[in-house]
Length: 383
Image 1 (cartoon, rainbow, N blue to C red):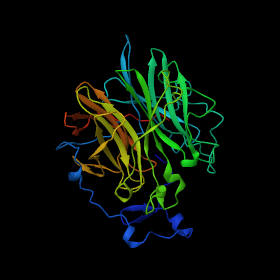
Image 2 (image 1 turned 60 degrees about the horizontal axis):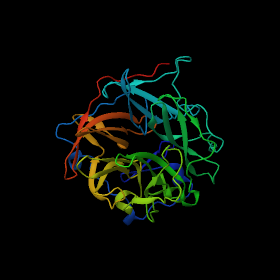
Image 3 (image 1 turned 90 degrees about the horizontal axis):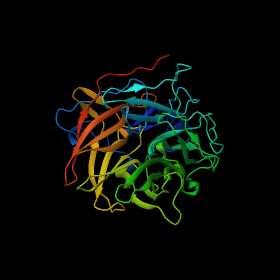
Image 4 (image 1 turned 135 degrees about the vertical axis):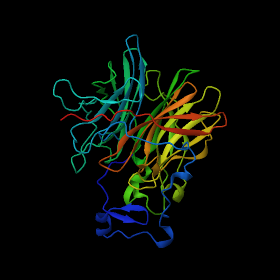
């Protein structure tokens, strides 16, 4: 997911920055404009009737990931998120919950300010012209009792494209120490972003999912994909080493899904993969430009890890649910919880993309349905 300044203009249901129009870039032709689709969530195939959503925290917490850690003392959920736009020196935010309903934003016990799970950046990360390192979309997983791995996206010195980095820690909240070299870049294809993790429980093999950021090579409005031609933005699956810190030699990435052009507004991203014990693989992803009301959480299913994946429709989109407005939901991570699913995602526009935590159900036919958020208390950031 791309982090940029708030757009100022509105063009037929798709947000277009006035600075781009003022720079002389032509608007798309009439036939290529996005349709102004209804905000009525009735078309969302994956939301249970009478569902409502309440933000888990009042702190901006975009691109949330989720990790469940169980030990002899206590079991906790941890969520990690993109740095707040108001603090470019803070890289990775952290929240914690013991019940998945009440989330506590984690502060530094010494300074009292926000806890940064990744305080030190590797040498390949360089600031943009706006002095922003653009550290995005972290995902954390546990490989041993005291070994935690983080994948993250950051702006790199590789042709000003984004790469994926890896960092390790002995504590779930960090600090995470990054490797000196990026894990994956593919700058000739636009860079790579939005890492996710999947473990095959039958083989114990680790896999990384990611998005090839092809729209970084285009220049067609916000998110670079407001009108054709639409570049490829595939979601890829890459087998990793048993440690989870290196790409396994000899294993080539596999394309799971790509955008369907105008139908996806040229983008699919933010993957998350789970497998039902006696059912299919579920591939969750966001589609569309995150700066518009067309950004949507969708999913696809397959009988095999490598695919092919069949799209099953939208899970959650812009609309009013139980009297609460959700705008531009996306960036979801999904975990299996027995016979159900747990989902964290964000909704809202910059700089106020808030995290939501929800339960969902699935069936053997591959249908998923969100039951609404489970949040009880809104945690607030201490000054």
